[in-house]
Length: 125
Image 1 (cartoon, rainbow, N blue to C red):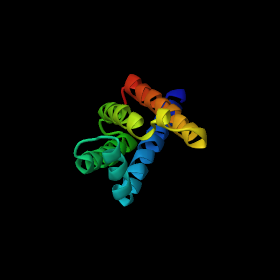
Image 2 (cartoon, rainbow, N blue to C red):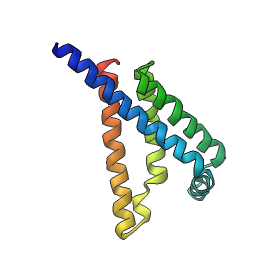
Image 3 (cartoon, rainbow, N blue to C red):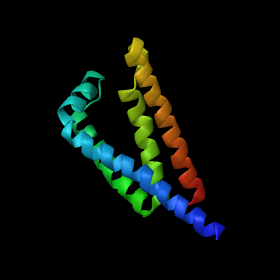
Image 4 (cartoon, rainbow, N blue to C red):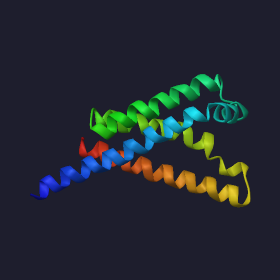
């Protein structure tokens, strides 16, 4: 019985993690102009293309994780996404005051998400 509970908890965890990235990717579609402008300002070449690649990755890998389809690969892809996106959008070193604190919180959140993805990878599901 305990094994069943663990499996159910893992499925719920994958659904929540993956679902958050699907939601974020869909939300980013509505903000492409703002986000691509931020990326251009940070020196990202072909920012619009890179942004759309990131959005597709968020949605596809998020869905894969949420439904448990090749969840290990989806989790690994989302770790790569976090490694690329965290310094791009949470550049706390360029900010002061509340904006700096907010960006530091974003870094800490992304580190925690990466840890969650490593747990998914370790579990192999």
